[in-house]
Length: 156
Image (cartoon, rainbow, N blue to C red; front, side, top):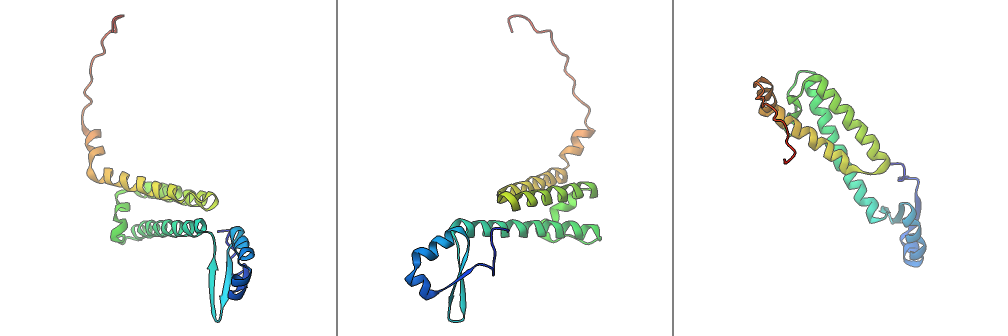
């Protein structure tokens, strides 16, 4: 996350925070700062930034889980149970899925729209459920039920 310069941020003591709180908070509004007290260090950042970090971490974990599942299948192993759904796809579809997920990750890294990554993974999971249900295969096997078209009349 480029906006977070962890370990290169400004360091303030707890005394600075007590005596110059407005200045410390103004700096924390722009970028994270470190508050040092004794041998401990604390990060001070806006709540929105912390929430975004938590969202990003959750989505990155989900991405890694899907990658792990796809990799397991490609080496002939069973995927972990939470991502067993990836086995519903053929290799080419799994590769397409991974490309899409990694592209969504790249976009989210830039625009912080982490929900779009989760939405995309959810769509792939739902597609896997449809594939596993056999509905598509059944529809492809059935003969089309053609209906003759009627000539429209002016009154219809």
